[in-house]
Length: 114
Image 1 (cartoon, one colour):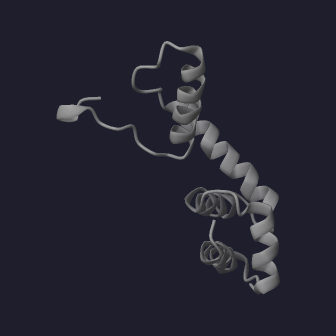
Image 2: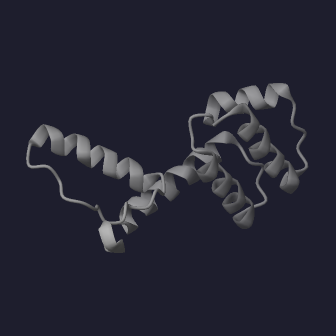
């Protein structure tokens, strides 16, 4: 997540809980959740405040992002033809799992079929 995205994320949280957002907050949150995709973190903040009035902490965001990514993996099938070579298969499987967890749609085949 970029610094600007982190500011946006904390500003979103402030809309719910009236927190103040300063440079130290941005730095601390960047260290704790800066490796997460912004879109997933944003979904996590909204989901948190839909379900609870608890003060949002980085651990809440990490837990909810993990849940979102796990749900995507469970709901989406692998696409394409896996390579026969075991070493290539492991790389292909890792890339497919990252694509699905990131919410990136599968590429369409020629003619629009999957």
